[in-house]
Image (tube, rainbow, N blue to C red):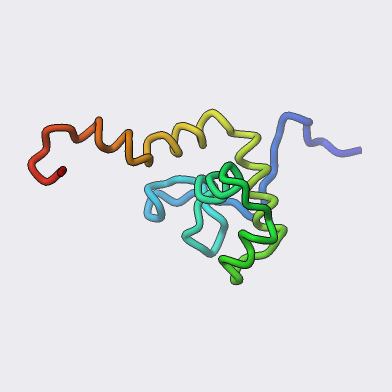
Length: 99
């Protein structure tokens, strides 16, 4: 009998490293963030299309990234919001470099 609880989530293709993408969860061995995969899915792309755009990743990696997204949806949605153009424009409103 397994000693793992149902609450414990294992995402074998996902990692975090503060030196890569600011510590956002990424697909191991890449700089492809879970946020990016989630944004593509939210835009209507499926796993086949994502793998076609990034042929160095596998369908299993994409599906694990999406699984991670749904297990951590609130956090990843916050990353999506914080990386949007609208958020950045509000954040840096009045900065001389922002046109």
